[in-house]
Image 1 (cartoon, rainbow, N blue to C red):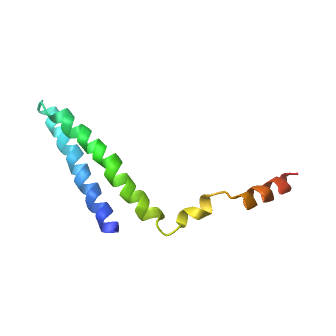
Image 2 (image 1 turned 180 degrees about the horizontal axis):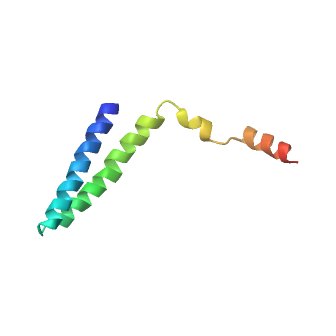
Length: 77
């Protein structure tokens, strides 16, 4: 999974660089290439990365539950 995230990142980074190059050469489809690069990076790479980072339940230490909230309110009073 880690290699998939790295490969996707490199592909989309190359895609964005290609869009910048096409834009500098005044290619008519440059804006489309850049837009699709941003679109796929946001809707393909980001969900895969988020799934990879938080699949083992590492996010649970950042979630506040009712027990933590009650403890903090008791400590404040």
